Image (cartoon, rainbow, N blue to C red; front, side, top):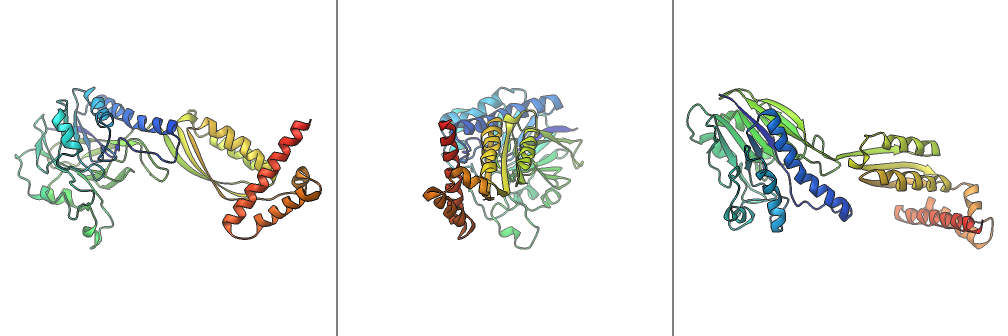
Length: 380
């Protein structure tokens, strides 16, 4: 008697990415749907018959009918696979809410919504699933407590499915919303507890894991873009847990010191060398240093305009990138007169005053330099 399953969570279908434009947001939203097919394909490759989705199938409770049905249709395409959906804190079960809408319309035979905390015998009669659905975004009390005393037939593999937070194991943790005790597998005799809520993949103990989101959605998530293949040989056996890659997009953060053109060239090569498929990469780049106006213009051309066009998305934090105008820079603007005086005043303001004032002055000085360079080109 054994079972194989795929553990996933936090699909958050319908998620809005406000920091990108509509075109890129559409790509990221579509990737979350395509991840469902990858999960189904992985299950088929590894011989798993069940996919446990540990909460937050949807990002919010109010979505268009199309958004609600899109993941259901992706799961329908794998009729020999059983999908087990759990309401989480983003999509809790409420009477006449999202989940009731789905249930009234009718779900495919292979898609099961676990809206009540009650045991469900898996169709192959080798295991029992103990789901702990959320009915509110913030629940006081451990939703998995009932698993300790759940009565199920003897000889079945006991598997828990929950969505919540395991924190620092301190005496105050139980007062946290959606708190889950880290020792629940031992108390409830679970071979495995499949958790959702944290978007990064994390092992709590041998029987308790967070799967992480199958498609990354933030720069600070560690271990996302994955799911878990779980194999359990029999009741009480320790599970064999194997991470499997599911994500299409790569998100990463990079900090770089730049003071010269050579530094900019190095950064250019570093970004282009991340992967062969740059169009699947989102980068948060923090730069610091000081550049001449000419080199700052070079940075705009090489990084802001060129490399960013190769990437799916590039966000640049340049709050610590300061101007360092040279005499040649100022001569390019004007060698004398009121324009030169204005440039020198902007240079002074960019070096003094508060952070916002320096930033405004630095931007104005750079703009003045660029416009005069354009003027010189036009006069040739």
